[in-house]
Length: 114
Length: 116
Image: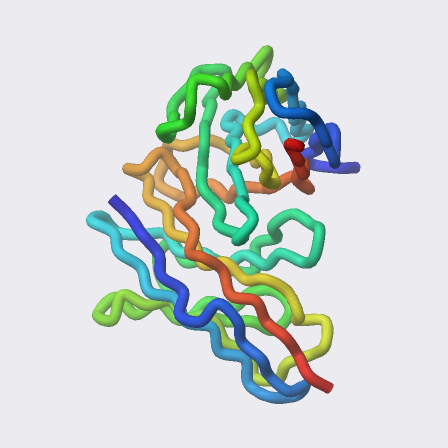
């Protein structure tokens, strides 16, 4: 079984400040980890993913995340927030053994203040 | 060109009615999925089909019946709609479920279902 916990359902940051979204997972098999972004009234767009290899992964729009197996974490960061980063962010876990299905966290809404 | 498309985008209906949501992908993928996003934004998988065969069925009421006429389409039919069915339903597709690498899922724009 797999599960994902996102700490903080809402995060407010100032424009230009660091964005940090926390994600912890539980998986009985080696996980694949993802961050998706959802803009208002839109579908989900993949920001980045970790499957194997380098544990620091870079994605679109300046986001990156680091897989830390010892901490079962996959936190998402962006050095400098932009107004366009205001959206809902979802962390998700999957595994080959799970039939490729995605198990999502509860989401974190990011508000960017001018 | 839209990779994963859903129709309709919005669906408003009365309790007890039967409705369908259609999904089509033009990516040549083998696997398609339905996810439900509730009012609190929580996303959960409902079904997955690989080459028209059901491979994931996640404790969904029998009123929900997916149908895959071919591997490019996965439709969702809902009988006897209830208030609790109000949600956004997302279709997704991926290359497959086997192999050494994860196959990225591509999501459609969603269908917002409102049951009155």
